[in-house]
Every structure is written in structure tokens, then in C-alpha cells.
Length: 216
Image (cartoon, rainbow, N blue to C red):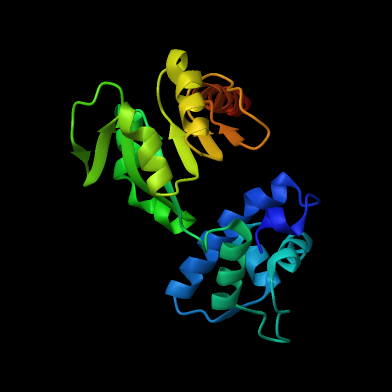
């Protein structure tokens, strides 16, 4: 059961912590650890033990065993299911420039349930990137429908983003990860996650400046 199926009473902060738990547990499993207590997880991750217990209670299908804790493999499966990672989602990228190519070349997304299978670009200059095909935009609707794609990633310039968004929605896309620096208009049946790299850098720069000022 994914977090959306569990209801809307789970905070965004809780959902945002889950990938961190998943990374930690996968590393623990690789290190040969079969069981972990919530207190051990809390200590290793520098998170409140109360918070860890509350978070894991939301996702775990089985309580921790006395003196052992949670089964690591089982907890990994529960978190993957909660986040929807157990159902690998095929996705397409629109915009095969620098950022789009970076997405095509990054294999780590598959650890988080995302499988980018193709890119589309109005100025197609390459037939493939890292073995992933790059198609002209006119093939976008048929490709999405034939492959039942539900997730699209937008990495085009701001001026083109809404037109690309419209094409994705009309082709059947239900979720959009938007890296164009603009707000998109979509119907209520489509989910959009906007990522503003400039704003993120500005926040980082501001916090770094404050930290350095404190050290003077």
C-alpha cells in the first residue's frame, strides 16, 4: 500500500524521511545486518528515537521483535511499497539538453522506482544517450500511449515548458517532474512536482553565508 492509499494524514516531512531510512537499511543489509532496533536506527541516523518509532509504525507490516528489532529485509520491502518503489515506473524526459542527458545517464534512479526509458527533443541531435533513445517530439503521443507511460520529466527552457506539459497531459501522462523555472497549469487529474534549482541554490548560498558569518 502506497502512502497515498494510506490516506492524507501523513505529513510531507514524514514522507521525505522515508528515502533516508531506505538508504540506511539497504546499506545495513549489504553489511550483513539482519535486524535493527528503532533506537539503533535513530542513533545511527541522528534522528529522534520517538520520531523513528512513529515513522516506522506507519510503514511496517510487522512489529519489531523483542531484543532484535525490525527485520531489515522486511522493513526495506515495506518502505519500498509505501513509497511505490516496488512498482517500477517507466518515464520519459522531454528536453535532451545537458540536464536531460544527465537524467538519461544516471542509473541510480532505478533504486527509487524510476526507469527513464527515452527522451524527446524538438532539436534532436543524437539518436541515443547512454543507450537510451532520443526521439523527435512528433513521436511523443504514440510512444506514451503504446508504452503506457504515466510519468514525464520536463527539462526544457521556461518558454517551452507549458506547451510540453500540455502535450504530455494530452498523451496520458499523470505525473510531471518539472525542472523548468515556471509554474505549470494542469488539470486536477495530473500531479506536478516543481523543482527550482535556482531557488535551491539561493537557499544553500544564504545558509552558507550565515554559517560563515557565525564562524568569524
